[in-house]
Image 1 (cartoon, one colour):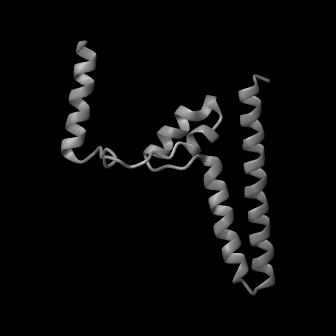
Image 2 (cartoon, rainbow, N blue to C red):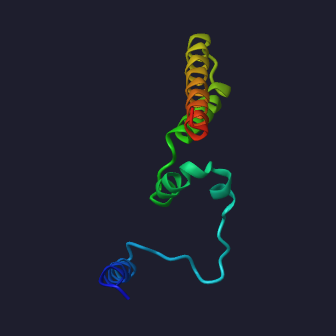
Image 3 (tube, helix red, strand yellow):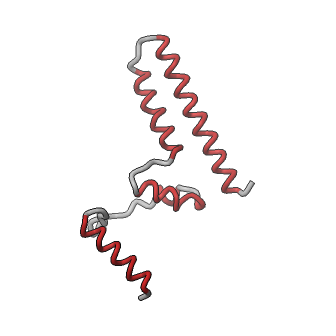
Length: 109
C-alpha cells in the first residue's frame, strides 16, 4: 500500500471515528437509479453535491417552482397570483435553459 493510500485510509478512519463520515448500515441497498439517470459527464459533480446535502442548481429551481405552486394554490389575491405565476414561469424557463445548455455541453457542441 502506498503512502498516499495509507494517508487516505487514515483520514477516512478519523472521519468515521469523529462521526463526520457515516457509512451506510450493512445490508442497505444503494439507490443507483439517480446516478445512472444523470448524464455521464455530470455524474461526479452531481454525486459530490448530493453527498454533501446540496441539490444541483437546476433541481433547486424545480424545488422552488413547486413551493411557489403550492403557495399559488392557496392564494386568493389576484395581484399576488399573477406575481407567483411569473416567478414560476421564470424558474421553469431557467431550468429548461440550463437543461439545454447541459445537453449541448455533453454533445460537444
